[in-house]
Image (cartoon, rainbow, N blue to C red; front, top):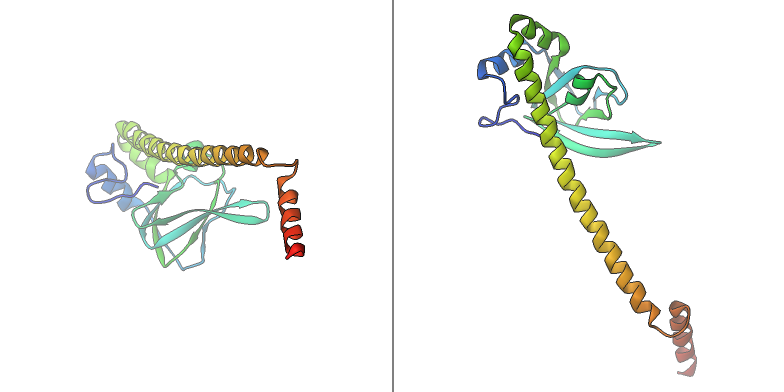
Length: 185
């Protein structure tokens, strides 16, 4: 996930004054640990910026909750649903006392009505955020694929070595030989 710092701004293609305007007009909401911030499969066009605290991102898969991320102050979520209007893909729960800024569609539309160029800069910033997250996901997938390839090669080597052992089922032959050795002792 992308974090904001004093050198890296939240919305990189906005002017600092524009970013300040977005953040200063965004309402603040606080959550207690364990409190549901956002449920999965909810229609919502809001970007949540974590000012203080931390949240857990989880996805419901059947009857189980699969942890996806732990986000902390300076990080954000909700930008995909903000852009495409699709239901949220995960649920978010406060992991500590948490304060969020809620950047909703009305806030952004208000700023666009004052400066039409704001729209391009804002959405370019969101596109940059999504591109960065896609790159990170691709890197994680590459690592996962490398691990799967390593496992497959290792398994193939083990199976090839096992095929050279006497008998069709080397495991049962080994157990039989051990059992026979124990009887002879």
